[in-house]
Image (cartoon, rainbow, N blue to C red; front, side, top):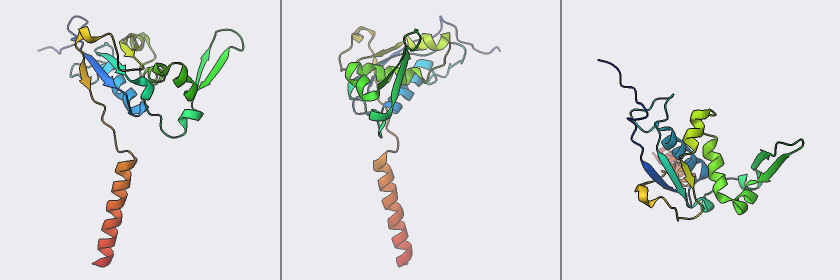
Length: 168
């Protein structure tokens, strides 16, 4: 019995919608990159594009943690001598908020022609409107990891255990 290797004709591509409103940028980007690469499928093959299409909405309200809003720099080059340009994340958010999410996802994809093909399946919109309703996209929820609230509750539990040990 031979091994199954997916080909371009056997790949069933789905459409997913991720609502980035109020979500942390890195968490949205990692989930989008995972879906674009096809790592969520049992037929994932590194040298074949098995990924799905991803639509990210509400990119304007994505959360950037820490002081990255003022400190993070986005660089691009015009191609001319001395043509390096830099913009802060807060300026990029004002001009083109979808670019924040696009750059974050693109940095998590392979830097090859295969990665470019994956990146072309990403659609990012600043608000909740998108023109992809005909594709019947599925809603995809990004799970927030152990944030500061979880850390504080865990710290409180540890303190309660210490107090119980001291009393006993």
